[in-house]
Amino acid sequence: MRIIRAIFAKQAKDMFKNPMVLVQFIIFPAVALIMTLLVGSDLEGMPSNMFVTMMAGIFAGMGLITSMSGIIAGDIETKSLRFLILAGVKPHQYLIGVGGFILVAGAVTSVLFALIGGFSGVEAAKFLAIMIPGVAASVILGAAIGMLSKNTQAAGGLSMPFAIIIGFTPMIATFNKTVERVANILYTQQINTIVGDLSGSLTKPLLIIVANIVVLTALFIYAYRKNGLKG
Image (cartoon, rainbow, N blue to C red):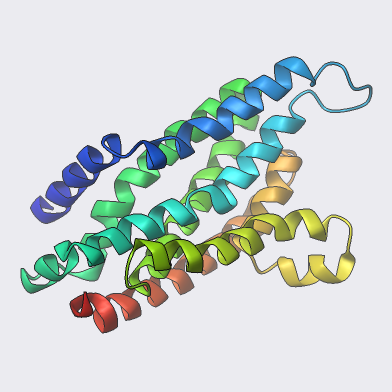
């Protein structure tokens, strides 16, 4: 735990020094709030929290992937990760330490979305129950991409296509049944399904998200052990 706490504290300090990462946790709820106030009540038949659910899905699905990959690639580029590995830091310790702070920040942002959307009681609980695991999946995917990158520039180029595919596939699936069938294996599709209809059951979506997390964690561990000392 001491190692995880040290990495967690380091990441917290680094994040507040990097406005490009910090803005990811502010811009999405800010846009949701502005659009809800300016447009939400003016379009007949449109749900009042439509922009909240839309921006929350995009945030959980793609907003964190590029940021997390850049953080990990930065540790590789500055040799920080090599030092940690030589010091005996295990893959899960590094992932929990670095990703844990991003997850906490993502959970706070998810609460902001719930407040902006006016969710309360069971709806708020279900919203957070699907958002926070979705944020975790994006954090782990971003970490895996970062581990496969040589530097922050490469991480940006590699993570952006993944972020776009992961983030926008659920939107395309709304209009195409074939895409929807394929997209059902993605955690982002499950977020989109539940956030768009909070009356639905959480069981299947959560199981799919957990399966995504397991696969992505295995990919991260493989990349950590294979590429960690190459930085």
